[in-house]
Length: 175
Image (spheres, rainbow, N blue to C red):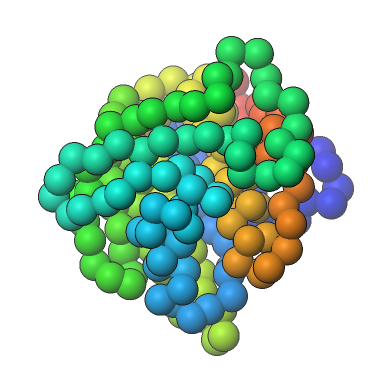
């Protein structure tokens, strides 16, 4: 385990196929809501795609563009990943829920905490352990990028962090 990672930064399973992960971000809440809902801001830490409540939309991941340098992508990962999605709950600026094609449902919840904002992500219905591990490492690293961006800092190389986190989550998650 990387000793520079704080234990509270790791995602946890609240049920066998449900991940919960949190980060404290600098406020105000409307600013963090924009990082979730505005395509240009979201693409800087997660994925691009214009969202409209009730309508289908496409999320586009380009993880090689999240950090400079991006690090070395693992074998089998292309430069772009696309996923059909739909907003199922939209309560600005507190809650956003999305269906993610074959990898479950994702809920983003924002809660003011002093001058900060607590972001909680709950990702449900992972189909298998391999998908769960990839997403645990992915959410962790994407949130590390978001924290850096929200604080005006340069994030660590995405793929290097993701690869290390895959090993750490594999060791932490029961087989």
